[in-house]
Each structure stands twice: as C-alpha cells, then as structure tokens.
Amino acid sequence: MMGTQRAVKVSMSTSKVPINCFIVSYIALIMKFLDLAIDWVVVFYMYRLMVSGVCKRFIYPCWRPSPPNEGKYSSKAGDAFGRVDGLWWYKDSGHHVNGEFSMAVIQANNILEDQSQIESGPMSSVESGPLGTFVGIYDGHGGAEAAHFINNHLFNNIKKLTSENQGMSEMVINRAFLATEEEFLSVVKKQWQRDSRVVLGRLEKAFKEIKAVQLSSEHNANSESVREELHSLHPDDPQIVVLKHKVWRVKGIIQVSRSIGDAYLKKSEFNREPLLPKFRLPEPFDKPILKAEPSILVQKLHPEDQFLIFASDGLWEHLSNQEAVDIVHQCPRNGIARRLVKAALREAAKKREMRYSDLKKIGQGVRRHFHDDITVIVLFLDCHLISRSSFREPSFSIRGSGGVSAEANT
Image (cartoon, rainbow, N blue to C red; front, side, top):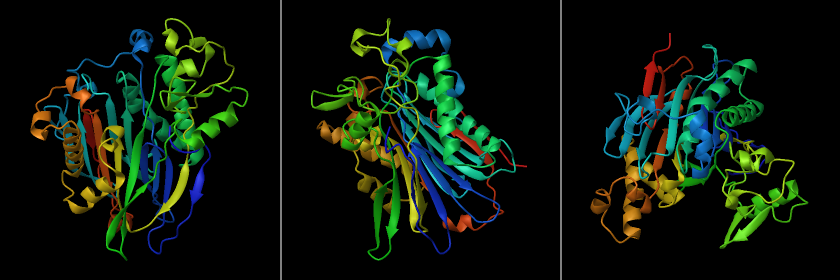
C-alpha cells in the first residue's frame, strides 16, 4: 500500500551495532542472528486490509470468525498477558527478544476491525533458527474477516519460508505475501485496504532532541509517484487513475494500489454479480490492476535509534509523527501505547468541540463518527540487549484483539 515497488537498500555503518532494516509495509520483524555478527532485521509491511460489505456474501459461506465470546477472535477477550477495560484492550509493558514493548487497542466500530500481533522467539520453523520479534498491525474496513485471516497466516508463512530458504531475505518476505494472498483468495475470495504507518524515534545527541523518521511510505493514488507507477504498469489504460471529488482513485474505485485480496480488481472472473455495479469495471482486464507484492526498503539503523511506533491510521488522523515521538520520548515506557491512544482521543474530542470525558461515554458504533479503531504498538530498541548473544527471552505470542499464549524456550 505504501512505498515503491523495488527494494531500496541504504547502508549506514555503526561502530558497535550493525542493524539492517527491511521496510516493506506494516509488520515488523526484528531478528537477532546468533551466528557471526549481530544483525537486526526489521520488516514493515504497512497493509490495511478491508472487506467490503457487498463481498461478505462470498466470505461468510466459506469462512467465519468465531463468535464474540470465543477467545482470540473477540474484541472483548483477554488474559494475563493483556487487560480489557470497556472498549480498551492493552498490555502496558512486556519484553521482546531485544527490548521492551507496550501495546494498546481502542474499539470504535461495532466489531473491532483492527487486528494486531507480536511474535517473539524463533523466526523460522526450526528452533535453532534466528531469534526475533515480529509485529503486525492489520487495519480492517467493513469487517474484520480479512484482518483475522492475515493475523493467522502471514507470520506462519514467513516462518515456513525462512526455514525452507535457510534465512530471511526480501524474496522470502515477498513470497510470504503472495502465499498469503493465494490462501486468502482460495478461501474467502474478497477483500479491501488502507493506510497505517511506522515511525522511528531517533535521538539527535548534538541537539539533545528526538527526531521522528517515517519509515513507511504510502501506496495511495493521491501520491504522484504511485500514479506514475500505475500509468507505467498500465500504459494503455487512460482511466487507470481517476480524480473523483478531489480524491485520486484507482479505476475511480479505490485509493490504494496494493492489497492482499481485492479479487475483483485482480481477476476478471470476480468482476461480476453479486458485486454492486458501482464496484464493477465495465471492461474486462487481462492482468491485475492492484498488486499484492510488498515494497521493500533495506536500511541500517543506528544505536541512537530509540524506538519504533507502529499504529493504524486511527492514530495518525489525530497525531503527527513528531507529536507521537515526543510523547514516547518524554513519558515512562510503562503504558506508553495507551498514552498515545488517549492523546489521539483527546484530539478527536477537541476537533468536535467536546470534552474527552464525554467522548469516553460514547459506545461502540456511534463512536466511529468521532474516531476510528486505533491500534498502537511501541517497540523499544535496547542496544545493551543486542550484545548479549546468549540472552533469550521466553517465546510468546500476543494478539491485540485478545487471545494470548506464551511458552518458554527449551
């Protein structure tokens, strides 16, 4: 959804901690290799996953999320690894392989459409494989089915392919995306998408300031570079991007240029009834209009890089990159994700000229008129842990919508 198609590699040497950063689009994978050097690999996949209401008639006969009272699919579930308080789910603090994290979710829709996960431990199916921490935020629209599916399949595909290829690479990441796409289309047949963001907090020692560095770019038709890419991929289609109501849309329908799913914009066989006419294309097409491949940027991080903020667009609608980074830098780590969400909610209330205390009284569904579902994960990069090559935190898996499990490595 965001960024360019080709991988971009940036090398920045560090005297003590060489760190590699794969920026793909929204999902983070921090890996600590236990062989020769100590490297971190961070993968961001920035995909927003959506299911349009008209497509649900395809989805539900094939695959349904569990009812609200069944564990990890519930926006109300939680256990010792997270707490539920009204529309909140949060885990104020925890430890991943190389640092701490904080996580929070606030529900606005009738059914929570954001899904998220942190996986810390072996990054392959082999226990002796590289250790790491995987962070994923999947922002749904019109339903949570697609986000649930990706939450349950993408990381497993990454682990499987990492094992098969004996290591992590851009090819592995790309193949994991495509495999998940094929699985999704074969099971549920439809879906949609939008924008999330990853922001790095970098300490500028010379000025004693914290600087926000956005690591993800947007795969949105409102970006001139995205429109140029679409025109180059579809040179014979003058209507590949259309300006409607001052907003650029692919084929006049959708703003994003990449997604997992959206079968009706990838295969002509799905461009038919019962899809509503306003979503159907009048002419057949012989190649996908949207792409599933992630864009990948490889970059080296510095020891002064302090933390990463992962958040669905519900946060960024109300806070700037720098505002979010300043909050994380100035406040205690414990509960920092929840603090960011509250800051966004206060801004949402202010925009509607109401008090935050009044906004808190509004229930799900109606609350969507004031703000979107918001998911935030803050991952701290603790350099002193990187040098401890024998250090292993217990493996764990945590889902932001509830449903947590953990087990110690043996």
